[in-house]
Length: 471
Ligand code: ADP
Ligand code: MG
Ligand code: ZN
Image (cartoon, rainbow, N blue to C red; front, side, top):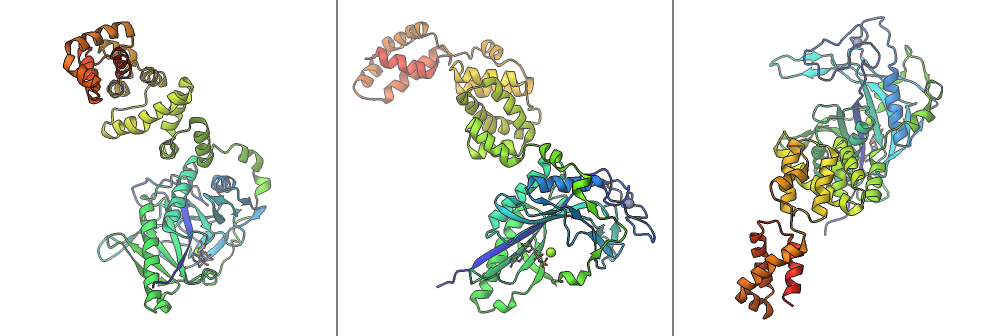
């Protein structure tokens, strides 16, 4: 029988911060600059004697993240040099933080955060040139946040969801675009497997994860790889190393044996002052001014609107749609109408939008009016969808369309009764079938009434009246 194994995962996530200028110089921080080596200067090109200056906005952004995670904001924080040689890091060291990060502790989706610190990004190597490589230093010195979690995650899905939630949080806080495909957010996963619940196994670190799906797949792959090594008595082959994720092969591969922190000979950056954050920032005010965060918004949607969790997520991920929906909800007022509106939005509106770029968010009044008509039974659900398909492009009044197109349902029972009686008289056989116990026959009569009224009869009302008249 197979043994039980306990996977442990800790994440290290980098995010490029949204600032006008770089971390330690006045060069533009422009992730979309296509021309190489445009946004560079003596500071970020490591010319001798050039001095760095701290970008306050970048520090503020990390503090915002720390406050949102309910972490501790350091009284005193400093930058350190992390020494290593690589062509994309012209100084021969990266300015990072080691002993005194800006943020310690905190939590997101129940996952404990170790720290969040600030550092500078490296340049980008271009290895696709043939027999030589080129380096673009536009990204060198761009403010980079690093968040480290405790080793408290135990499966791939939770790790993926944590990373998704962090992306959402960074966007809500407006501190990073955090686009994984563009490398604005980069996830590294540390994974270990143990046969003893109370002990950690040897961890590997997986890099090159360009999407949330790859994060999940690479973790699942590693857990399986290690499990097989255990099962075949080769657990000594699990070594502390850095592995890459090969997207085309859907496999991890060994890159290098892992260095440890003393290899970097960290020491405090002598060219920068230490920072007293409680003096430099009004932390209380910053905390008060944080926007509504995804978790708070979820709870509010659940309480105020009572809509399904997966529908709530549609709004959580689309702030523009969500504030529009809230305006519609305000006009409608009652929970049932709001739920109905939300159903039409998350299934039909979102569907229409996907297939037609002309579909837009219209005046909330017009959408609310449509929902009121549907809810009151003035138009059928078929007609509701048809009218919706038109108003989301033309932003017309749904009532006017319903009138013009004769889509208003007959709710006037007197007039409807006459039509129903006519249908009953003309169909003695079907009526006899119904009275003889064939429930299906009723639907045939409803269908004929609908036909006679050109679809304007309310089917529910018709059914009710038919049953009464046939008693
Ligand atoms: P290193 O010094 O090798 O960078 P750290 O202790 O700083 O290691 O941890 C780096 C990341 O690895 C953190 O996210 C941490 O949660 C995670 N981690 C530490 N030990 C383990 C382990 N045994 N299994 C999985 N992840 C781990
Ligand atoms: Mg590390
Ligand atoms: Zn510069």
